[in-house]
Length: 259
Image (cartoon, rainbow, N blue to C red):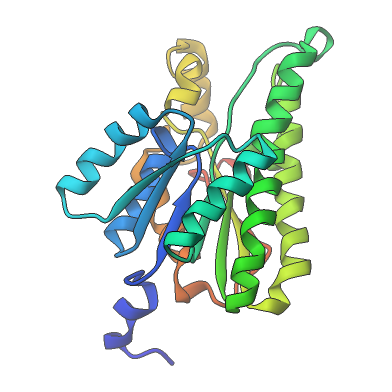
């Protein structure tokens, strides 16, 4: 049994380094901020150095140790080069696969290019970055990988079938990573956010009818706030989750629990 004085150490991330993809804004930046507050050094990733430096500035101002690394997570070679640069500087203990996009249209009229973009950003990037970083973690005998899923791992609704397909795949890829890598000391889990007020959901937040429907549909009666994700991220990144593997933790205000 853990003693009370052991609890900060159990959840603390001091001395660890976290790489968060797609972290110049929204959920990615919120998760990076939470890990930094728990003591981790964080590496922000995206395609725009300007956006990443703007995101890093307030974190550094409050004392966080922050680096930025620019590479496109949908480009396998760029991923390999980026991870090599990072690992040459410091070992990555925690990976958060957050990069993601949304495209909305009825499935019968969905654009093939948008399908390809969704698959590349939401699914292939998780494979590329995890597969590239995992050998380093395996050699060290430890590592935490946190994939960002969605309630769309479990649910569908009109107009986002391809997005739903990517998130369902992320859930099962998380399980597959667990099956292959848990024996090496890695823990691979996912966070499934519900409906959060983020740039990705701007169109829905501004839709009065959808906003009313969501508040009625969600037992908590509101949109998620980015702070609501902090606890799950720190838990899955810390020693507190050392025997948790292949799971998806839904942070959704209860939306998956009711019909």
